[in-house]
Image (cartoon, rainbow, N blue to C red):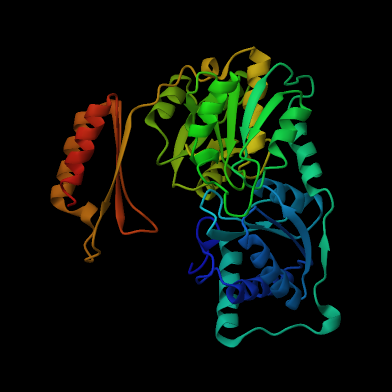
Length: 443
């Protein structure tokens, strides 16, 4: 597809395609395509980027011109929009966010009325209609058929109650001290409230968005301030979401980071103890230590392409209920139909209370292997540098050297002229040596 990527349409604000004209025409195209399928109202939520106001207005104009009504929910996490789209009986949902990217980027993601992302067929149809609008302009419906806009009251409160319902009713967080980093993003009013209302003592950081500080040295992609706060406050756990609160990263009471792979291990092991017979979906980048740990419990594990969309596809194929990425996208289909940072964190917190165990204890049993990742620039000459005979021979040699105690992943970046060389081994020196041996063949 020309405009839709694995996570909607995204770009630098003010440059194509993140311009008011393009976004208005995108809204019109989406309204025409989804309207033809019976859509009457689309719910729109956004994160805290200053550009969200402009994009929201442009989308609203395009949708209205196509004859589709709009429900404005204001700043909300991505999973909240997915949930509320269904709760408010909207026919589709839109999130205006660039997730963990800096403030100067923004993006647009569409959801079906079931809270899942639009199908490829729907996205292709929208792109076709969008191309028509870009080349020929848009045709506005008659005045009496224009879409109307309404603002949803207490959308955040409804989502808070939804999150709390995912926590076992016989448990509470009383006695736990939690540091919450909201990334100056969409969860800044929500995340800390959820944990407080369940009884925890909460220290909230990075909860003062100003339109340009979203994800800035904070949140799930920058954990140093959270680690420091956990140590300074002698907290039991630290929780960090990203700008749109679909990623979660944890810090235990010692200041050690617990990433998405380790969260998957904790939740999958507990699910098996409680009768879950399915497996786990990770990605090509999942640490080999996760695979080995699950293997030791005879929990099936498969790898999908990088991106929560591909994880969801594998979950649909297998019928399994648990999947995610090391970056903190955790899919727990018994609780939510999209990655939800707060819901995933509540599952871990419930285990801490239930087992009266620290996060440091819960993560035991999985040993992450050292991972070395080197990005190599290449010129596209028409010859795949990964498919030459010398490269294939070197790869076989490295894989033989690692045996069952390591893993190699070579892949082209989908967005840059880079080849990503990733090696995992039982010791960092071996991983580094093997990675450099592969890079030699590419430079």
